[in-house]
Length: 89
Image 1: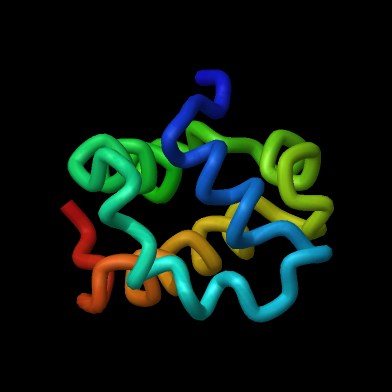
Image 2: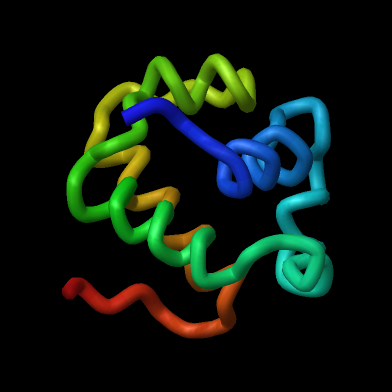
């Protein structure tokens, strides 16, 4: 699956390596985005590896060696964005 908005936009703005520190303000800016769609997209990325390491890197310039490392980051990002630990479905 291709990376789509709103998650693509969140990655681009808040997770880009050139935007250090922006990740810390995602939660307070989520109102500008469709939160349910963001959750669906992030769940899909975590559980189905729908966003590849290469695809994530192309949007953020952030490098991960494995899909597992990226999934771990997505779980951390869930906590940052939604204020609750990610629970496997």
